[in-house]
Every structure is written in C-alpha cells, then in structure tokens.
Image (cartoon, rainbow, N blue to C red; front, side, top):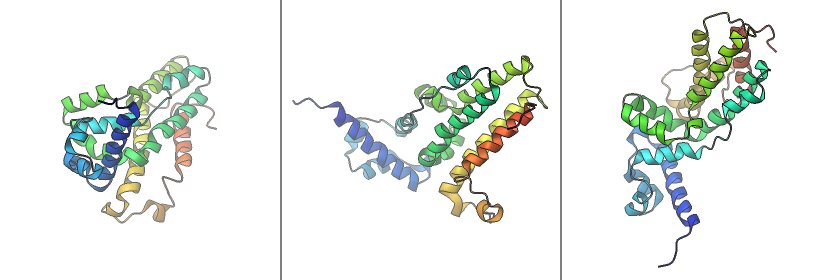
Length: 229
C-alpha cells in the first residue's frame, strides 16, 4: 500500500476546516452539525470522521489555526521599565492577535460562548485543548499583574480601585471586539435602528486604531499617569 504524505492529510484537514467556516458563516454556530460540514466538504462521512470526531474537535482546530506567536510576558519583559510602552505594545498586539481574527472566527465564538459558559465540562475541554495564548484572559492576567507591580513601585497612582480599573479595561476591549462581530455579521439583523456609522460617524472596523488609542489613553488616565500622550 503506497505511503500517504503529510501534505495529503493536511490538505484534507484544510478542506474540512474551510467547509466548516463556510457552514458557520451561513448558520447559527449552535445549530451546525457534522452532517452540514460533511455535505459542504464534499467528502465522505468516513473521510471527515477520520480527522474529526465531533463539532468541538473542528472548532478547537479552527481556534488553533489562529497562530499567536506573541507572548504578553515578552512584551512586558522587553519594555518593563517603560510602562507607557508596555501598555501601548500590549494593545497593539492584542488588536492584531484577537480583533483581526474576529473577521474570520468571531461569529463562531460569539454564538457558542453562552452555551459553553453553561457547560463547564465542555468549556474545560476547549480550554485544555487550545493554545493558551489564544485566550484573552491570559493576556489580561499578565497586564494586570504588571500594572499592580508598577502601582506598588509608585509609578502609577490609580484614581480608582485596581479591580474596578481591570474590569473597565476588560469591558472596553470586549466591547470593541463584540461590536466588530456585530457589524460584520449581524448589522442588518440587530433589531434596532441605531447605525453607529450613520448616527455617530463611528466605523468600528476602519477606525480600530483610533479606538485603541482611546483605550490606551483611558488606561493611562485611570492609572493616574501624569502623561497621557
């Protein structure tokens, strides 16, 4: 029997994952079935199940397709004595690593997250099987540890409790990420008449750098930095 190359297997996986993305873009993520993906891939049932035994396996592979080579610990280490640069670089890489991927994978995770939150066993499986750098919470954790250290060193003089500031940072970045997903996938189905672009001149996708600049200045303000630029 001839030996099958690694490229052959990788190509089959790519066909399946590309088919999955097409299905997820057309249907609510929670309603997508293996049957849907098999049909879209034009492979046999056995040909798909040979690589992925269920929907979760496919979604985990999609998550891990987003290769994040940047480690927030390295951002902090490389700029440790320059807190403003740490925050700036952190936000720049956070945008590149997470907001850009929303264009491809955002709808899937946005729709599945409420389900996973209520299924601890399933959520734990996702967490254990995916690259830890693909979890925003791990990025937040490293940033908050650093901000606390710099506060103890009297570099920062926060205007509120650190825990409240941390919550605000998470809400700001989560809100931007959510808006990017809503605009890209649901703008015509959102159920209310306010169009951020039309009403307020806000285009969250094309103005992303401006939004991140505001987040940057807001963090410096909340941390009591004397320099906001």
